[in-house]
Length: 219
Length: 235
Image 1 (tube, one colour):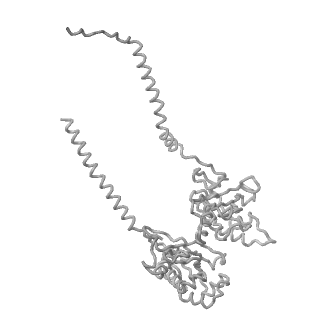
Image 2 (tube, one colour):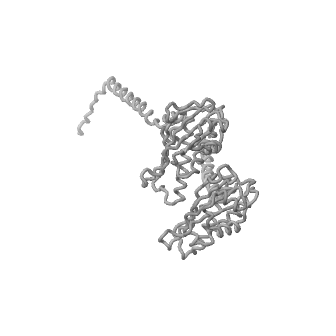
Image 3 (cartoon, helix red, strand yellow):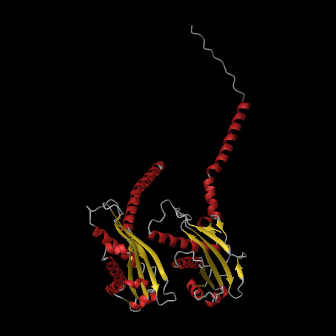
């Protein structure tokens, strides 16, 4: 009688084990799905824009500007709009005014940072975005898209003790597409360049904004 | 007539010697088991030792007085750093590590010391004591960057930096640590992986930034006990 009881207990245990094991996998799949579709909070790296005025200045290499004439204006507008929405800055110089000033004053690169800030309405912060690399395919291979936008993000605190020095600096690089093997037959160069601009501007702006970042982000 | 079966009574082995063999065999078996047991559990013993004793550690080179207000100065007079912002990057790493490890209660930002140091003129040098007093610090950690490079030969990617560290008493101006006049030299070597060499300007900047962070942590590690595996350099 006792052995029958032991046998049935063992059977029950086995059944429970068999039931639980696939459940584990299911829980894993659910957790993995939640992880992929979820997001997490990322805090800003630079917090010095609060109650300050700023201007976003994008400086791209001449060859980049020649190949992509509207890119500087596009990057400036995107970053400026994101910062105006996401930070507690006291004010900002609209992107179109900054771009117009830079285009009409090509010698701005020779100005001291303090003078540049004065020329831009006496802003407290200049957010300087330098773009040294912007390409949609590997050099010499126009059949496969392999876009890269690379540069740096810097902040000049023109009201601080070191107006000519970077108070913050960080290299920045994004890529598109995420997978290899796409070419002009799949989509055009304009899509690659606009995706790069969007990604680059978003990454730059996120450095100044507390934000929710998707877990599955690929750039 | 069938042949009679040859029935012989075999003489039984004498009990005495046979029993002795068994005893010896059993003894050997026990000895083998006893020997094998510790051998098989060597890995367990090792893990147990690490759990109880902890991993190997390196003691601090100098222990800061927690109660005294401390300031940090990153000195790059010889212009070793390729960009000025890297001074700040190193300082931030040192400061974060010192505060995270709760080695000091009051730490004055390196920006303050840099501001005073920047007022130095060639005919009016500013002493470290003046810098420390200028920011209201009791103790000054002076870090001089002697080397900072991503490659020793322009080909190999082997980021390395060298810093000399000294600690001064701001009130008396005397050196608290180390005794050597030139300071404590610390070399930081960043581990690299194959194919990790920077290929673009952005990657180059990122590599410099990472080396600067490592340099800062390597300097801060002189002031606290760290695990040997976490050590960023060799003093």
